[in-house]
Amino acid sequence: MVVLALLGVQTFVGIGGLKPFLARADAGDPGTEAAAVVVGYLEALASGNAKQALGYAAEAPSDTTFLTDAVLAQTLDSFPITAIRNVAPKTAGDDNRQYIGASYLLGTRSINSWFQVERYADGRWLLHDVTTTIDLSSVDPSVVGLKINGVAVKQDQVTLFPGVYNLTVTNKWLTLADERAVIESPGVTSGLFATKLTLTKKGSEAVVKAVKAKLKSCLAAHDLAPKGCGFGVRAPSNGATISPDTIQWQVKSGEKQLTELKPTLDPSQPEYTTNYVEVKLAFVGNGTDDWKYTGDGAIHTVKTDLSGSKISVVFS
Image (cartoon, rainbow, N blue to C red; front, side, top):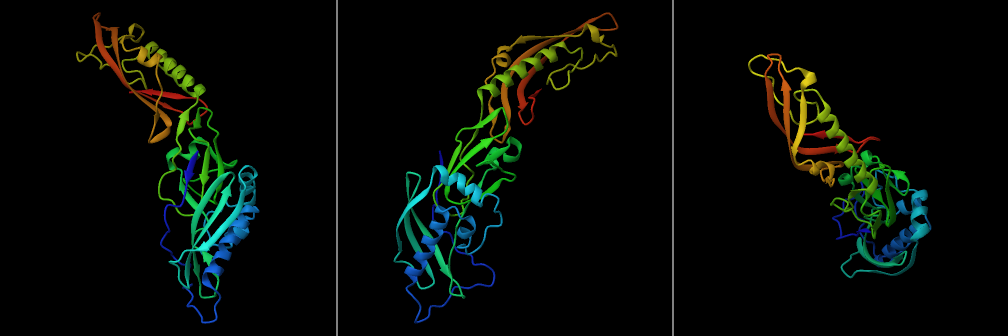
């Protein structure tokens, strides 16, 4: 389970044209007013009312794809927000900015968090953060078909309310090392999402099968340098031509490195596997000058593309 929590209070940036409200002598207690905003926000989340929860934001998020009642409902169905209590201001607050502490249950997980609340010129108290933005670029969401609570992820960054979210991928060769993300409290996070893609057993077996088929195809090719095979020899410098039907390629050593490959996902491109091997090959072919020509080749890298319905393999 991947847990993302607010690591610190963010520096506040107000919405255009609004400035912190100067306290009046007859104003209510700032701590009590700010605490009421936090309670209202948490209760809105707990009831599954996304629009109401967003109404407590100082600045509304630009991306609301996952900030809907439907997404909240799935989250709350298994992990409701309950037992909202201990909502109280921190002594460091002032008339126009308060840091409100609150505790609540997220499912059975006990959460303690601080909320930054600001008062604006119109007298309203609003929350600095009501959502968390996470970076999913490490799992290449559009390529692997990542979904959060059943909703397709179409960009690298997503914005979420606090809650527990189910993550799935539609790519049949891949799965997630952790299929659940926990957002404990709102706040912008700067790091990459911690979960990683892994090969399924079916995916790993399919990669090995595709690599074996590629090797077989390369060895059967009647070419000096078979396409996509990573090895080859040059034509004779004396001008002779090698008769294609006499060309033979054979593995001299290292074949088990391919037939018993342990596929490794490329960390920079998780929809690819990259493995480094040392496979040596021998070439023989007859020239039009009646001479027999020999040569050597090698495979150093095995790269497979898992982004499609079929696995493609390239040797180099």
